[in-house]
Image 1: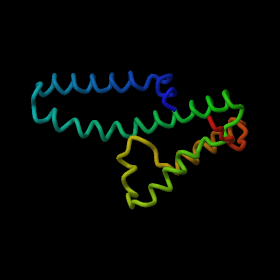
Image 2: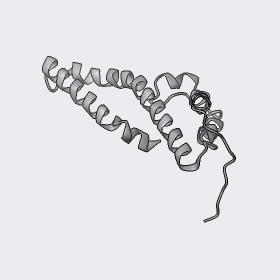
Image 3: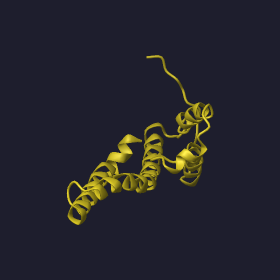
Image 4: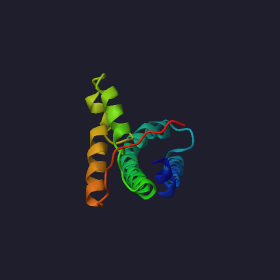
Length: 130
């Protein structure tokens, strides 16, 4: 997944967006203006949805890497399912609107749909003792 971010150049896009917004804010309102300080949280809120798209693209890259390396995508959703079990302990339903990552169930569903669309097989995960 994290390699997917690197391959998709998400780190560079994020830096570029931040630099452009900071430069525009500084040009329009001055370097230390109160308006510039107010724009930072608003920019972060707008970035959350953009970042969710990046997360979905990185999930897709990870799914493709799993299939390429193992020949199947078994276990691709296990991490998110475990997180979802933990999330149930908290009642934070609306938090995902502000989150930088997609809702867990959506990620699970999207990965399952993508695996089926791409014709990837799902097999049991074999655990090894190292």
